[in-house]
Length: 389
Image (cartoon, rainbow, N blue to C red; front, side):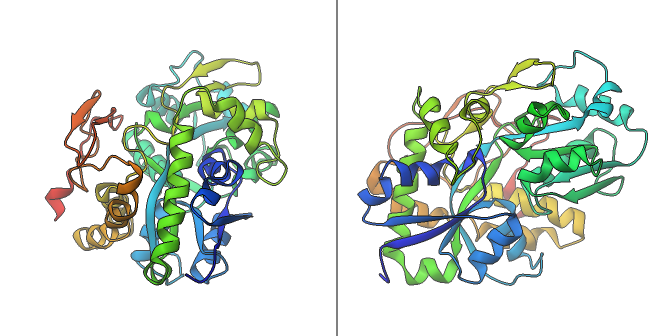
């Protein structure tokens, strides 16, 4: 072991909570390490900081290491996703002018109706801000808009905007709509600039959002540190999964060195109770953001395969090959190796059918009892990874 300090890059988002809580509540010290959290300004900087060894680990968009494994993005480095940090947590919003062209009273959870209304309201090419080209934000938008009758990315103008800058881009008229992680969608509402029309969870109800990422060679060279890091973060996820901790979590995340925002705004994502318009309309999104329940932290290889399949179809890559490379990125082997002794429930398999669970379902597990919650795509599609093995 080269030392007890592990440097971890993060972006100021609510879903960085597992890392912040691991540090603030001392779960890192329980494991004999010190997390040195390094706030970054963009996802490209997070990717580069990990790839070039400026930090040991990172809070990272789930599709970034998959894209890197497929040779996309111009940075050649093998990155491993050790565990999923969060599921869901994104919002789709539009400018006030676009919101006025959409019918009132749309169901915040109805991706079909909202998609149709957005396509009807778009009188020019939609300029949509996303935090990074290789992100669940982009993948969910492409999937949703294409199924809604607006072929994406061909018929839309997708623009990269760092999350904290999304409200500014909307105010400057650079984008008409956005998909972003909280609290930056809520900030557009708070500033009177936009309206939230749909949570990402209404497109895919259990989408892997952020992962704990490290260089593969670092994980190989530092198995002890890797294990300690994973256990510290997993304990933080378990703590976040308890009921009644959102107020304390919002207070921690609101500190200047993290999100530097009022806890009241951060709390919206933690409770799923969102203020969606400048006039104060409130909508509740069940399971808006999940840190622990339903095996949220397990890096399912089927999730990586779905992401790779979407990218391959869009970019003209050979699909089966891309999916197989992606499977190697989500390290269920290391999850099983390093977390079994802390009580993490291990699924009996490392892949599952995505989109195929309509209600809470008990599944085979190595130890304990595992209940998987609903996992569905809004259009009823089902992704069976075994068809591409």
